[in-house]
View (cartoon, helix red, strand yellow):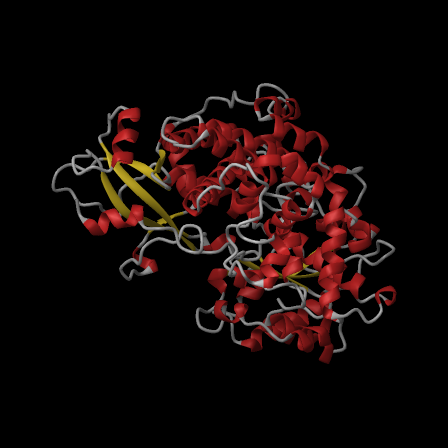
Length: 609
């Protein structure tokens, strides 16, 4: 067996989960691309029109039927830990706070955590997943505790990340996932939760805090998660090795995606054939999902003698990745879902700049926001009026929502922007001092485009309190370690052979397979919006502001063609699905019939196409 190929599977885990051995240089453009459209084509080709039968019982009844299948410790967390119950009021997707999707995207973080723990039990029972009984329970409890989001889910993560004084967790391996960072802190600091977890506590904490790359002796890391390894009482079972903790963390990521993708499809108003297709591709992916020693891999059919792997070859995870991208493109990163972030950030800025907060020190702002968010005191953070906007999709029909209040003034797509000075300029950030100059509150995420545009409007004596929406999904590289085996190999025999790793093993351990995930340019949008109704509910005249913004873009040099400003404007940018036909007919009709209040009350002087 080729040593280089074997190394890809068996390399010792690095300081971050998923770090593999050094690979040869590659070009992003050479990688196989998977997009959301791939999943639709996959489902249409197979003509899977059967109805989704896995949710024959009402959804909430189905979710509440899952805890009895979990461990006694898991059931106790669900029943008695105060912080877990707060997840009942946190929707899994920010789009739940919009009238466009809110009526359909109704699954909560509590639903997801319970379901993910159940899926962990299912996956751990499979013949190709080699875990001890203790590891199975640790994985289940990790899934119960892995997503302690608060209002707005990831939107609040991004808002917290923009606060000067927030810890630089991205430098410690966490990205901007403050919910995961805070969740690991809760597991360490909450005495009641520690008591519930009992003997599983140190291993659960080790898995949840695994992303952190700080030295075990770093005082800030010890403050967050305690000493490593923790001091345990005499007679406590040995801690899991770093290699097993790494394996459980990787399993956590995979099971997380399986769970939220299944719930996203079942609870997003999708057309039934797409739901059935998603169920099929998750099951198919799970059939190919294996552990190899201390590593995860995907089982692929063995190549014929002399055959080379080509860039156009289909893998069992292609439809699964495509399904994930379909939801991201059409719901999770739709402009109206991204509007949730902007409105929450604007409201939080008003709170922190209010006289009642005085001259709050930079470090205290983060502590103030974190503590109120973790205890669920959202009204103190965002104010009553903003909470009403976020709850509007499930309130009386007359309640105004985000789409009713905010009007798009300029709508552009990725294709409208020049490659050199267009898309590239969207990533440039200004200092917190400059951001504070134009919005009254220091932000670390303000782009140079937003700053320059606000200054331009100020120079014209116009309201410059704009909302800049970047709905572009990210391009990313996904990596899968793979194992080749006979297409019809008996699975128990295959797993035994892989674990032995003998020279005569009828399998080939391969390096990482890489795939690129890219978003359609039509779903990558730049939207400049503004509050369209005043406090009395009367339309404001936004035409002068829109004209000034258009003049700014005409001179700023980021457009391929300035005529786009007229031809590309869409006043329904916040209430129009990207691909209507992926939704049920009744959902399509509801979306089509919806008219924002700022339109029905006069249109704010804007051109309504």
